[in-house]
Length: 148
Image (cartoon, rainbow, N blue to C red):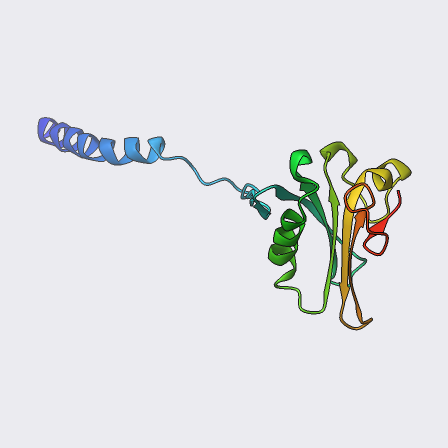
């Protein structure tokens, strides 16, 4: 009887071993999900660095980095605006730089960040404003540029 009981216990142990081994080799789910890194919008000659909300308005200022060798190409700015503003029917504001170290960390920027600013686009349907201005070093037409 002891021999039969021992054999049954041994068979049960052998049969349960693959199941328990498989469960040990499976990675256990973590208690807190890891933050997923989403890729920010980008395109040929530009990429979004960050978007900062204006208070709690749901409106954002998008901070964009333009390739320094393409910062005189208006088509690059237009492509970025098209992609970033197409889903924002009432408000869109985009600021452009050509050096990442100057891209502002906040809505208001330092003098050095303003001096490095290459362009700024503002669209506000409620205010009746739609304007794209470039640094005068990008576009020399005084009606389309700002001095920094």
